[in-house]
Image (cartoon, rainbow over all chains, first blue to last red; front, side):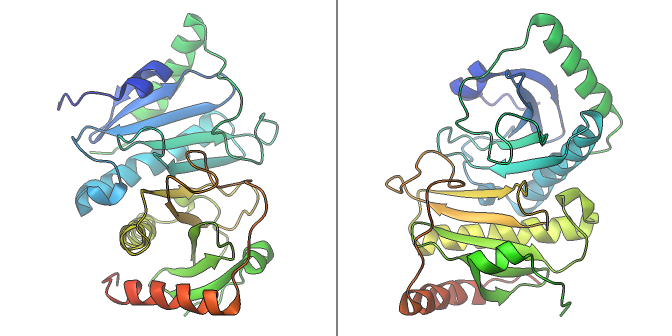
Length: 140
Length: 140
């Protein structure tokens, strides 16, 4: 396990869920959306195309697979997958379950008011649900 | 060449640039951003994970490669790559060159005021520049 430092802002805004073969899986501490962030454990990478071809494919494989199971588990209407990085330069990919009645729909989630943090119980519950989904993925 | 119909809204907001092995390449008719949209020529696909594994990889390969050459050609500070699809359900991936002095920075481009259309000359010029970049890619 490569121990690359996590950007401070990502660290402050999320809590850790688990590790995939390439990426850390973080959950945004915001009950308004089921919103996961994947962070490749590689140093000095900002753009997707800074990764070699194999790591790029693994990154998208992890993001797509997570999106598919999350849409199902959280009964989403749509999944948003995005690598933006205008604020946090450390490469990270957003995987967000969207609902037609969520506060930002049909707009994007970024910059939509303030996050509403999870309670400790909620956090444990959503993390367990995510882990159960991720557990059955074959991503190695 | 598969002749899948293009969503009406995508058709209205963009003009065609070229075809990659999997995707149509469209340019958003908005001079505020160099903003390309990739649309896989496959029917009935809304989520990235609706594609088979091989097509998913090809989609991201095309998006990443395009992002890399566009960042270079248009001297971007960052590239945003995103599959959202909350409004237009036909699967499409945004590839957007961002600049620190663009009107939306550091926020996302979606929903930022009104598009500023290209003149015919501008359109021809940016299309030629994109084609020159795409021409040297090996994406088959």
